[in-house]
Length: 182
Image (tube, rainbow, N blue to C red):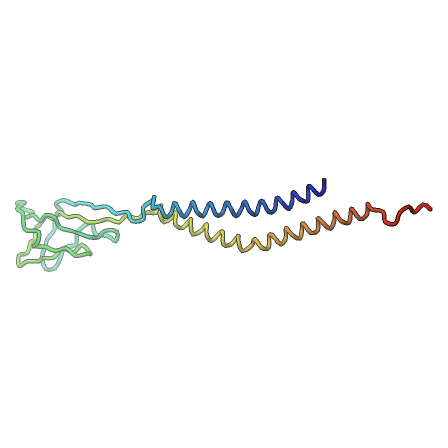
């Protein structure tokens, strides 16, 4: 019965180590597949339209109200006179990447309405969180795997002591040299 217990302990250590390795590999495959599939979308952008924003178009320049660090690709789609809604050629004004509207012709538009579009790359905190968690998982596995040789060494020493104890008990039970009653 003691040999069965000893073999069971060795089998348990080997099986546990193998099971841990298999679980870690499966977890890494699942996490890398989910992060690589772009389910959360790390490049999420949307086009937003703004109609009839009142401003001006001259050499000084007018900054559109929806300018921020997440917005880009500003395009003027309609230019109107703010007093009578008469249409002007869109080419009379230009807009740069910073959302600054300037005069592109010899005529200044001191009272104008702009209709424009821009691209908004909104923050995807879910993607950032998932990526950081994947990095933490990898870092944690690195930390644990560095300790595995020490853990296996301790398990081997415990098994060795167990075998020595069993051998000492067996030696005490054995009688060497025969009958001592003569």
